[in-house]
Image 1: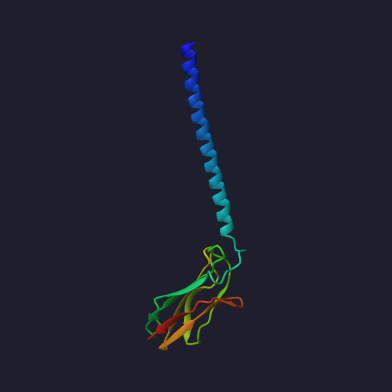
Image 2: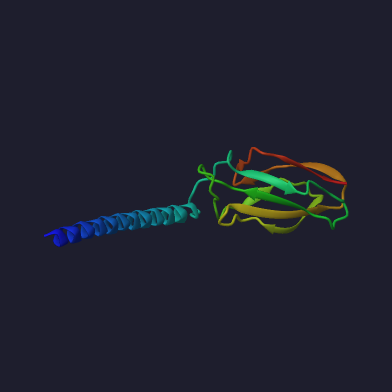
Length: 145
């Protein structure tokens, strides 16, 4: 009887450990599936843009006015959760003296649109970006010298 009791106690311990590991595996699978579903929703282009979350920046903020040196203007279009909004056309408010050399005016899956600009005229410019008829509230100042 002692041997049988010891065997049952050891078996019960193993069953408890196996049950705990099974629950942990199921919980992990649930977390992975939930994260995957959330990520797929984040990459959707049907999200609406939140202008206050979106932003515009330049790098560098100044360049020579030789028509060769460029300034990269980058716009990030974000939704209310801070996730990128894809497939949106971005327009910049630029004077005719500024030339856009390269552009990706349609936002990618991260909500990013890129413009490389140059000028042969020495000037400082305040730049704004818009999507449709909506302007981003942020403005940046670049200088060609």
